[in-house]
Structures are given as structure tokens and as C-alpha cells.
Length: 123
Image (tube, rainbow, N blue to C red; front, side, top):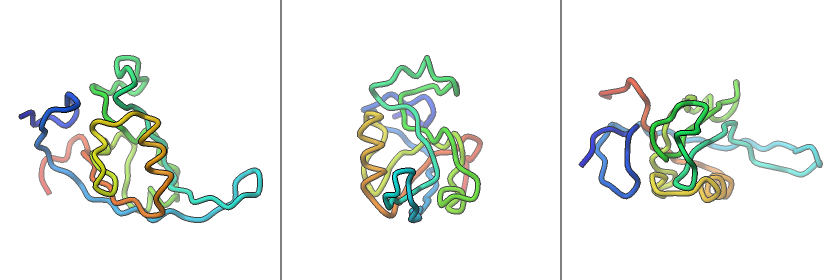
């Protein structure tokens, strides 16, 4: 079993400290005038991506938060840039494609996330 959340090989067991974050999306209007639910963050990574080409320098195929918009629901919930999303509403994000992760995040109005954060070693 590996204890390194940030050099994790998809499909292998991992033991690490996870931080729970509950993010309630906020309503808004998109550029076409449609009502949308916004979370206020962007993701990168996935098992279908080559992490060696990551401009952020990530070290595995996990799903990472690459941007948190200031004042957004994500920022208020405590999500930070470079957090690694381990789970979303109980769904394993350590073995998911980028597209599936985006679809799953868009589908739910409330996101109960478990994240790993570099530098956090105890609660």
C-alpha cells in the first residue's frame, strides 16, 4: 500500500489524510441566458491524460483542482488550487477519466469532496 497521495498509481491502495469539503453550487446565468449551477473551480488530470505533460507539474493521473475563482462557492468551501480530489459524493476519483470527472461534477448541485493537500500531514 502506498502512502503518497501525490504519486499514486491508479488501481492501487492508498493511505493518506483526506480533507472533507462540502461545496454547494450557486445559481447563475451563462452567456446564452440559460440558468446554470456554478462551482467556481476548474480541474485537470485523469487516467486518460499524460501527467508528464501537465503544466502544473503533477506527478500522477489524479484529478486536481487547477484553478479556484476568487469569491466562488469553491473558495468559500475551502477548496484550493492543487488539491487532489480523491472522492466526489462517494465516487472514486482516483481511477476516473477527465471527461467522467467533469460530467460527475456538473451533475450534482452539492459536492461532498475528499481532497488531499500537499503539506497537510495531520488534522
